[in-house]
Image 1 (cartoon, one colour):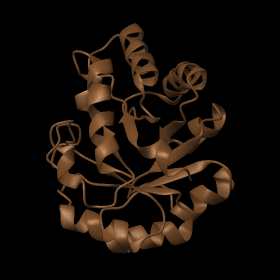
Image 2 (cartoon, rainbow, N blue to C red; image 1 turned 45 degrees about the vertical axis):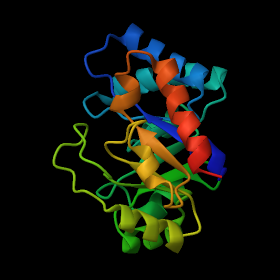
Image 3 (spheres, rainbow, N blue to C red; image 1 turned 30 degrees about the vertical axis):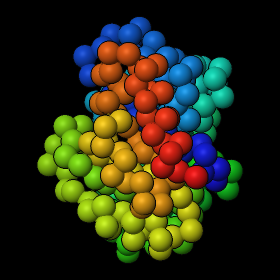
Length: 210
């Protein structure tokens, strides 16, 4: 897949936002330069997730930003999202690829070199690796060493996105790892000024990633 699309990867979290505020944040992020968005909502019914995904996709389509659905293959297909992201304990990568077909994006969480190689062989388009720093989004998530992240980037041919506790203040620590981009939750979704925060990320990423 196009590595450039992974440069600034927003992973959503509604926190305590109203639907209107949440959708406004998504649109602001798209307008400000976020390159891809993952809708990750763990506490919704299938029906709620489907309708939220449809509303988010209307926004992402308007800005030509790919929409990735976390975990839910059924919702991904139902709304014709650009792709799916699966974690360690979800569908086998090969099964997800078979059902999605060759054209949709398939992202896979990979915290180890072994998992990264297996995911690549089974049809993943990109890897999400982390948590790189402590994160409140996934409490008690094991930390992935920056050295491990770098080894994964050097081992696989598909692009790798770093995730976990990333902010515009700490991502420069990943400059020499070979990542294609960074995935961000809280530092964008709870930013006082999403546009300014997006630009802060993009400025640093332009210096970090060739």
